[in-house]
Length: 321
Image 1 (tube, rainbow, N blue to C red):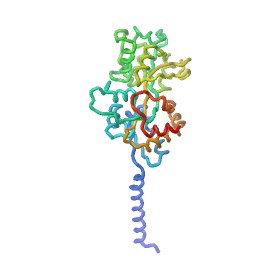
Image 2: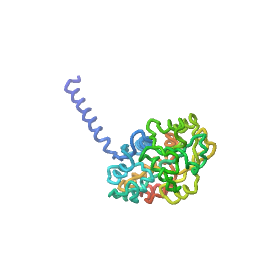
Image 3: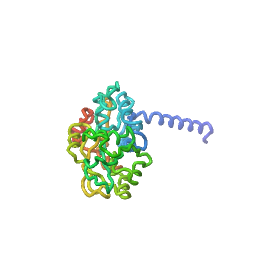
Image 4: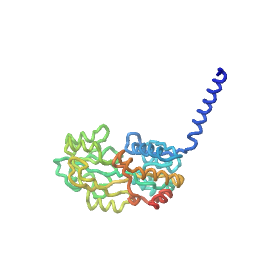
């Protein structure tokens, strides 16, 4: 006959086993902190995709996404050891390594960083109205253009284009700084308040498809000698091709340029961990591209020439392929 004392003993034993399983289970795995941009960004979405894939495919690793305020925040935390991996824009990584741009006066050493893999492209897209007679980049002169809010990526890249073309803001009839918050920029475009706007982001983009259908927006080719020279001379930029048919009004391939988002790690992250993570990612490329077409992992030789080497674990992985 089972007495109350025996029942209590059984429950006590079960409680101990459950407690031990709670504390001992995670001890077999170690945390890998993955830095992304803020929640709601494509960077954060991509990080969550990587997090789920790594945790499912790699034993002994518990990947955790840590959203941050931007690349400067993530690069600094990566260099200081608060993050193990981060998704970083190639231009920002170049500036951090070479003490240029936003990093010119920061007394922080980023030399302990290395690239694991290129994750997705971030093209600069020039969008124009249907009746603006803008067919090339040079046709922008004298037009009304929106360059995004001050300090936004659109605003900063507009400055890059100005320098490449030896232009100034005086060459335009209007240089608006309308934010993309709550679609303010697209509303101004559709109402005819501006002739052109700069868009930066991955493709295909549902919002651009809608803009094309509802407001007759067109994407202009940026196959320009000055831009080609810029891409050739600046290691952080790459040439991209938007394939015909990506958008309703796009009947031919569009040549543009932009940056890459790279998976970057501290060199303190051990070689074997990086190797196993890469093996999981490249073995599941179809799953990544199903999450979003932009996440079709690129070949390692297509990594931007940002001036830092591949991580030792990445060299080991790619040398065997």
